Image: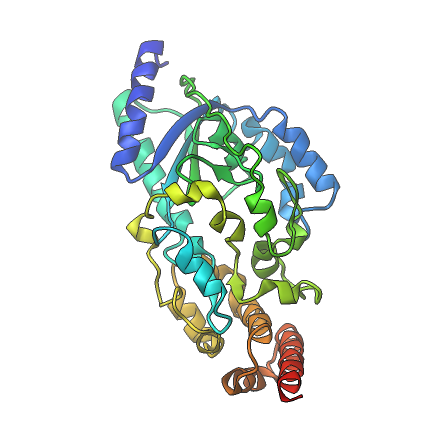
Length: 358
């Protein structure tokens, strides 16, 4: 057993240890989700999770931490900064350049799952060295955990109207957790500071934020380009623009992100993904895709979905000879999913070219 004084002393030290490991913030909350359980059930009942069947399959584990890790009493939550540049202007400028590829900022560098879990393990090891063995498990978007709920309860920020964790230091942060059987003292929650602001709602290209604090994933560009395995609905394709993996718009226009910190060096852009053209990336064959994106979260969507997404982006761009040539080269691709989106893109470009001639 660990006495109360030693647990209070441990909790006092955790923030400093976390900063030494590169974390921006650390907080502690009881392993209870409260009304978030009901909100999750309503969201699932409305079908807003789309094809993310795992959300429904693991709903009970998500809502009951003790079912996921028996004996869990508290959740230690950490935040890790990732935004690669100061301010949002470079990203917004890239969205206005339709021949360039837009990749969500969180995916430009190393896979955050590995970085976060490694550092959380080091934090857990340091805890064990200080107080002896204890029960725990580390997570980073790798299991059914209500990350934003615990982070907000632990004082790392509040749930923004886009449903992401938001703080006075912005939202460009990864979250990670340690479920533990230690009865640690909680940290105080932070007061929400969204007020009347609806910038994130207005910025969403597909109107996926259907109401404050409510997102319909089926409309979200991140879902469409990452989670959706099949055909992207035709009415949504033009709204995707040049976004080929994820979407940041709701965060790009959030006023609090003016105060965001530069991201950890681990997440600095790799393979020129922050500068690449659509034509350049569309030319990658599967072996090159696998090799270049080793250690990247992007690789999990696979080469076929990568080509599907870029085909849509090319169709949304200008009818240049390079774009036509790139798409023509993929017209006979082995995957029906690629062929379908390439055909759509070619038709889009042909229509634009005809209008320019008229």
